[in-house]
Length: 201
Image (cartoon, rainbow, N blue to C red):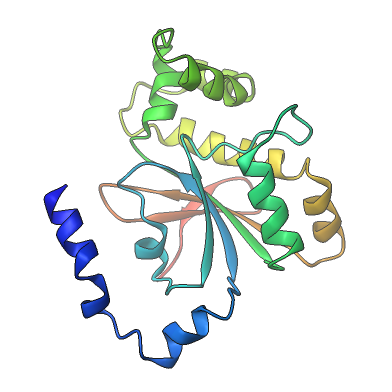
């Protein structure tokens, strides 16, 4: 923690806040994409994409889960999606899963999560749609089948939002599925045929 605190204290000395780029950020944000991914500390959207401040709007949670539209109660995910589309006018949404995901690992192993009731309730959102994958996926610690299946399911959940459907129908929105390999840095993209492939450099 000490190193993090020291870097935070010296942040403004390492960045030119007098530049036009940073002054412009104070006037508003105009991100190119909403990036939905896991809270995992090994997954850093700006590092993966090379994004500069102001270029991506992030939504992060355990397992990059998108609750289906209309669930009762307040939802930070629903609010973020709505804001990104209605206010910021984002035209691309990326759902990015990753290898070695703890949330997907808990689902695959069927861990007893009674001591973590919040985690258990959260993962219950994703569990039903992943049942067939969880039963057939091999016991691979990197969990590619489970994580990729989850990305596909979360894209389907996104489509349950009226604001998403309206923009898809009018051609104002594109959805993207990605799978990031933590140990290699490869980014796989979901193709039209439903398979994930490494994007050619």
